[in-house]
Image 1: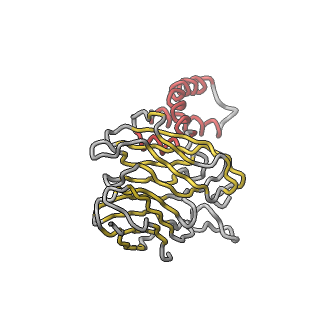
Image 2 (image 1 turned 90 degrees about the horizontal axis):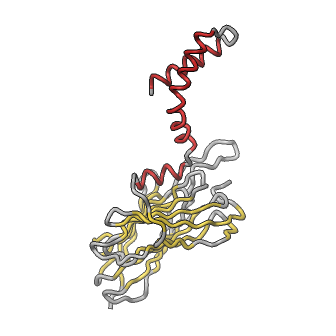
Image 3 (image 1 turned 90 degrees about the vertical axis):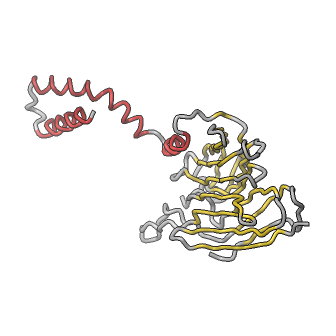
Length: 106
Length: 169
């Protein structure tokens, strides 16, 4: 899994409703396809995503084979005050990518 | 029910082995067994032919009856590429600590695996809305099921025409 891309507003105030956009490159192999020899290519997807802010849960997603390659996710948060986001992507087999970004609260 | 089924199986086996020697007594017993089985067979075949997405939906809602509406599914009317179809789901909700949307489940009814995603919200969410990109194997109805904090369910549907199917098909 490569380094994810995350888009936050440049600045936000406490009480604002902000949109968070995330993207990570991943094949999201469904487990339905076959290789040229006719063997099934095993499933390999990111099956879980979570976002927390200042230690509190904001949003979680259970992803299944119906999500496109390079999964994009966007969601909202009502800014409780200053803090740092922690985003986690978990792949089949348990590999994880964790990314932390501070939100500029003015 | 189990007894009736084993009866049926044995009769079938006997029929196979001795199709021409089937006597009247065996036929009468068979007919009786068939009547016994008929009632349960109807139920069994209904379960076997129920689409996977309906089974998934039932496992999520249990006995509850989802209410149509209040769930918005934004999807293109025509998707040229089924490998990546933009999707936004949202539910009208005040999203307060006592009245909020717990989760939205997205199902693609005609995909080989109907599960797409479950989005889970929190008191910090502020708005019950999420967006992603999904795969659609062919033209089909997409379903969004919202699970509310009071245990109720809302359901929204939208049909997407797919020009080139996704899922590596």
